[in-house]
Image 1 (cartoon, rainbow, N blue to C red):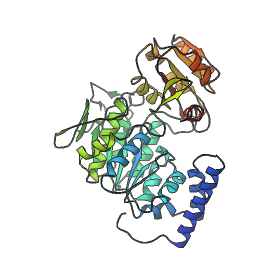
Image 2 (cartoon, helix red, strand yellow):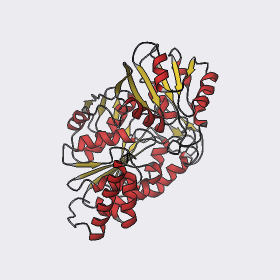
Image 3 (tube, helix red, strand yellow):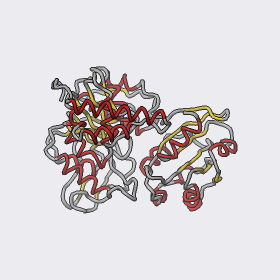
Image 4 (cartoon, rainbow, N blue to C red):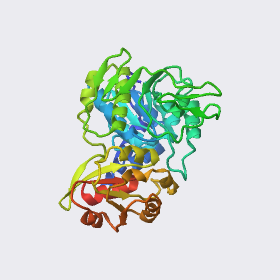
Length: 412
């Protein structure tokens, strides 16, 4: 934790140096940022390196199925009001990427770390966090991720008795159940648009009752806790009932929810809501998400959506018809190779938009759109889709590797 001035051991210093050298070589070879391979090499040389790097930091961990990269960025901006921050801003959120990020923050006071859902318990053990933000849990990467209740159970067991302050979304029953094993929880009413993974009680398996924004299990009594922070329209209400305006350059209700949770986290570290929220306004894009780029004399807005919950939120923030929409879906390792989740997405929300379909799995998506009675055209590339699109800004929605492909092609 912060205040421990023990220097890194010679072995740890060697591991950091070697990791940085390997990362630099990877970048020079054009193989990406090098953060993951650099972290793997460093951890091979010193398996305890992550814990050593975290010991001088006040750490906050951020985990969720959706929104963790953006929320990590918002929290990092807020905490910079109180001191230097190190963060895995590019989204490398497994132990190797986290280790690589922390190795570059020797002067930092705070560590703001995005963590993949499956690795949360282990990273929490290594980093001794002061705060953990839990935003949501929904189906994702169906070929390799555990069923959502199993993930919640892993969180619940891994965080039981944790000394960390848990900032958790009171509107997601899976998150509430996972966080309830911890003695110190701050509940945030951040909302939950996607409810299809939360109709059965995670505690007993009974049917969840969901009147309005409330929820409870009629069989075992498990119910929504009373939140102390509340997202209310364009404001966040703090535990004292004061309303603070949320002004973001990032679009959509989901990002207001991310800001509300971020304000609650910042308060744990002594940063007042007004200061935290003002600093969040500076965030214009997150790792290319929400960027508007010019390509072939057209404006393209780049939007990332990796799973049904993410697509639902993204559909809510695109410009109305007849705005053209390009959809791109891959099914590579980082995406998950199972595309059956496409059938869980309500594509009727795109009715009236000219739709253009690209990506490795464009034909899978085309079948789904056909069943949803949508009018679309299958294209071989983003270039062809842009050429065929009618005038106006184009909304481009892609899952993870498709999004990276697009960023490389359009020069972002």
